[in-house]
Length: 180
Image 1 (cartoon, rainbow, N blue to C red):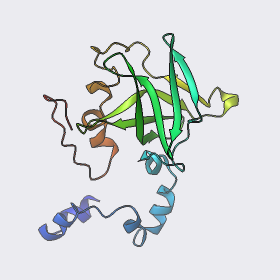
Image 2: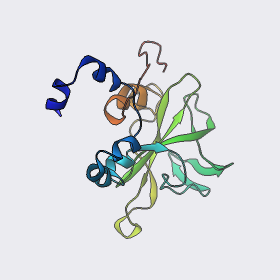
Image 3: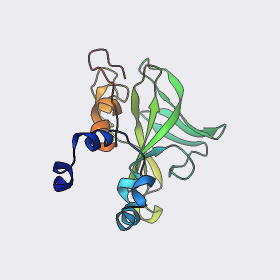
């Protein structure tokens, strides 16, 4: 890859900034595309649609800290009812999946542009292996003042995850204002 990049002129280098999507790679890199398709990298982050969501959102419930958390579908979308930063329970629409196996995490998007990972993940292993269940990722971080409380920077995709786990991403995240 270094040889190709170092031999490239400035005009074609700037075209690398114009992301075309993974399908555009296929015509020139068929073998690599086939190996990538369906891999963990391919499945790493996707829009929350039926072909991407592995978890039980059929009115599933999980009790955590003596509080009931719900995972459900509404209008062909995936939702959770979990405790927010104000201590009250709210419905949050799942926008993205993150990961594939052995667990899958789920992300919501706030009005200010922050994309946050919810505190619960789905164990996508077979039931016989202890999987097919919801669990809390960070049971020690349940207070809103803690960095890894789910609405804080420790679980903020824009700040913590985007650069390494996405292609052609522009974070537009300002740490001081905690806004995306």
